Amino acid sequence: MAVVPLAPFAPDVASIDATVSGVATNVVPRADGYGPVASPSPISAALPDNCRGAIQVNSPGFGFPVYFAGTGTKLYRFNLGTAAWDDVTKPGATYSVPPGDYWSFAIYGTRLVAVCLGTVAQVIDIDAGRSFRDLGGGPPRARHCGVVGEFLVLAGLANDPNAVQWSDLGNPESWPLGIRDGHEGDIQIFPDAGAVTGFAGGEFGIVFQERAIRRMVFVAGSATVFDFSVFEENRGAVAPWSLAKVGPRVFFLDRDGFYVLAGGASTPIGAERVNRFFASRVDPNALSSVVAIRDPTGPRVLFAYRSRAASAADPTLLDQVLLFDWLLDRWSYLDLPVRFGLVAATPAVSIDAIPGSLDDAGQKSLDDPSYAGGAPNLGLITGDNRLSLLNGAPVEAVMETAEAMLARPRRAFVRSLRLDSDADDWRASVGVREAAAQSVPARYLPETRPTVERRAPCRASGRYHRARIRIPAGTAWSYATVIEPDAAPEGDR
Image (cartoon, rainbow, N blue to C red; front, top):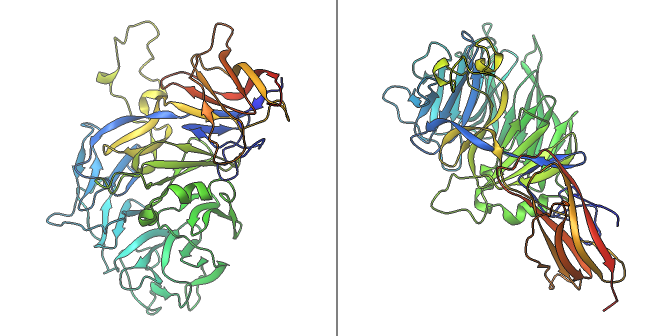
């Protein structure tokens, strides 16, 4: 009997004898199938309130990662020594992040800038600062911030959502309006395409509006400072924090699904694969809260969203995640509740935290680079508001094959099946049905585990079959590729 692959995840079009699958939960795509997803390992105490944004920056003076996080009213800095969050809010201030919004952060030299619509832009010296303060120069309140060349750019302004404004060249605390007396700070108000809904900085800026994507290019010595040209019309970002910039690519969510912008044009990445799946699950009242998270450990980006099934008692929890691998051009789904995500790094290890004795056999020497930390990792602020790294034991994985007629056009009897995987422990259940109609659901037989011959018995008779594989949490494994059924044809009835 031919093997049945664990096919790419595309629930929008999964059907009988398809080359795609409707279930790939808590796995990452591989070229030959799927791999495990690590569980979150907490490295911090809980924030005092629900997280509304976070960022990792590298300390300019000391070279180690520094974490900042914001709640609806405060800003905090992670204390590596105590694993707690130190309040670095401007003395005497109480911030106000609007419902459904998050803090936006930008690094300008040794300074970290934080903005939200309900608060004056804040700034702190990453190494020496003890608390945030108001950003100088009287900048406008804004939803987004970024850096283009030597300009600090604010986008989605509170007093004009259709505008972006930039600081003086080389001075993020000077905000003149108009090009005069050697100053180059100014504002650009867009007359069409709706409000600014996202911004990505870099060598040039990318401005996302409701119905347009524009490029923002510095033109030295010009009367306008920046040239704004339209990348694409009738395309934009529907969720302000659904943008993830990875090198030349910007991933984002528009009204009709997921896209990537590269080379000046956007390409759909979710059409006829996950767009309808996402639309059927996302809470339509929380669409603007979708958060894109770049995974520094691989060519992946995650889209965390609040589902229709989420508890109304916890309005900031994003309880489901779609994962996209852009090199493989494949998706998967994560059942992983989070509040925010960020590029992170493993922390340094103190001598007191090294288990056992330094004289133990096999103990690493004190100059081992792993003690210094700094290895890139995917960071998440989990549902309990703790900073965690996705480097724990594998979580429970569930995969299904496409539904197939194994003895077309006749019925088939499946005696057992084998999973091609290095997992020490896995379970299998076979779903059968007699008709292709949606009104006839698949009937799943009881789950079984493999025998010493590595085959899971099932005794499943039907016209259509599909296999569901579950790898329990904590099981060590690295790949799962195909299913090999032991099946025989039966009669037509």
